[in-house]
Structure formats: C-alpha cells, structure tokens
Image (cartoon, rainbow, N blue to C red):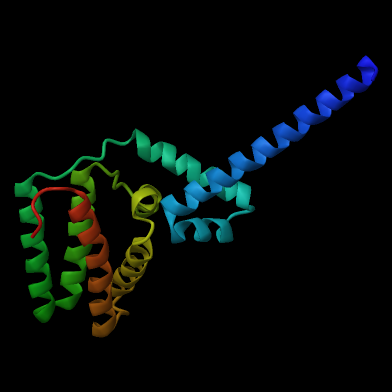
Length: 182
C-alpha cells in the first residue's frame, strides 16, 4: 500500500473515532442531565428552542448552582423550621389564605438559610431545579395558587392543595438540609 492510502485510512479512522467519542460524550451528558434534573429536563427540552439549547441551559444552571454555598441546617434550625411548619398548618384551619402566604414565606426563608438566592421566583426555580427537580412542579403549582389567592381567586380546596405542594418542597429542603429529623 502506498503512503497516501495509509494516510487517508488513518485520517478516516481518526475522524470516525472523534465522531464516536463526541456521540458518546453527548449521550453521557444527556443521561447525566436527565438523572440530575428529573422532570425538569423534559420541561426544559419542551420549552426550549432545541434539545441542545435546553441542555446548554441546564448545564449553565448546574454551574451556577455549583457556585452557590448550599449548607446544611443545624439541628436547632431544623427543629425550628419543623415547628414553624406545624404552626403554619394549624393556622390553615382558621385562616387558609394567610397560612398559604406564611407557607410561601417559610419555604423562601428555608431556601435562603440553606444558601439559595431568593430574589425572585424564576431565580428560585432555576437554582432549585438542579437538586430538587423532582419536587419543582409542586413549588410551581403552590406558587400559582398563592398568586391566585392574593387576587382572592382561590378556593379553600385549592389553598389546601397549595399547602400540600409547599409541604413537598419544604420536606425535601428540610431533610436535605441535615440536622435532626423531626
């Protein structure tokens, strides 16, 4: 075989290896993002311009999240939050609309103490999606009901549902935050 043919074969083999390696890398990245973000992965893909753009966005969220200083709660803080949640639930009996507002504030305060930025709802979703993608739909639903409640458009049953949704995220944030279990 001539040197020219060997060079062409070598270049072709290298190109095939590069293509295979790139495909493998993309597949592994996609699998990682699906596992890390859960349902939030599909939501990002569906609402994005393309799968690649959505994956880029999720990778950016991951990098931003990794730069945060998420910290565990002390045992005392854990217990205090658990007691605060019990008070909010008890308040629901007499003042469901106020209890839902208080649940929203309590969840936000817990996020802040753990180290999550809490400037606005979209920012909260963005950062929570990295570790709490499985529960994020609860937070969205609770927030939507709270917004409607602020306009006095939510029924008592919807407010009860908001409490259940807030509780799902609250429990996850509380237990992921360390401390003693309530």
